[in-house]
Image (tube, rainbow, N blue to C red; front, top):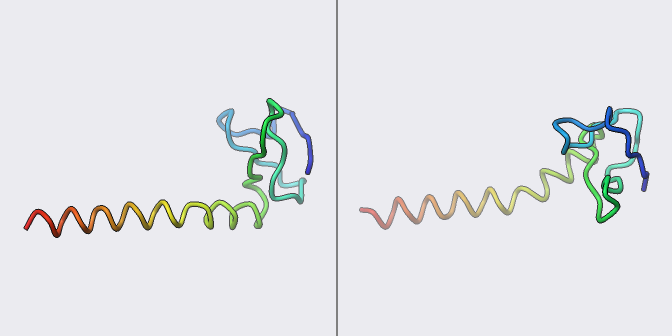
Length: 70
């Protein structure tokens, strides 16, 4: 993992975006945990993989709400 704390590699003070960094995750700026490098292909895949369960739950809850309102 890379410990790159430069502010120019951060988008909106939250998202790490460095196309020159090949790693998919990097250490957080405050040193606790890791964050995803959204410039790498593996980082974007990791983000989608982590978001799929949350999106599926929202779809299921919406579907149940629609069915229960009938």
